[in-house]
Image (cartoon, rainbow, N blue to C red; front, side, top):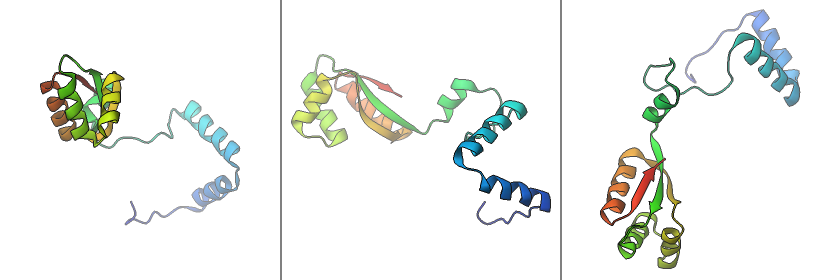
Length: 133
């Protein structure tokens, strides 16, 4: 959108000028009114896929590109799990042990999908139960 120039009519410019003069509370009221009356939303829209129908939560889960890795349970091989947690997170031994002992706990956030699946596989191979959120 940075490369395109949008030309506004005199009426559109007048609306923009009026909006610029509003304080934050008044502008918020205008936005709420437009959402309510016209059924529009000021929320950002994900532009992935080309869908836009009633995907709901299932559609949002499919489009997710980053995940939080939650250690649900350490399992029977706690030492092996601690080693993998240290490898994944770079935590010191004591911190990794505390993370494993504190399960369920998110041990890594905003990880790309492929990397998250690889980390999950390593943790599960060590005996842990893992959830990707």
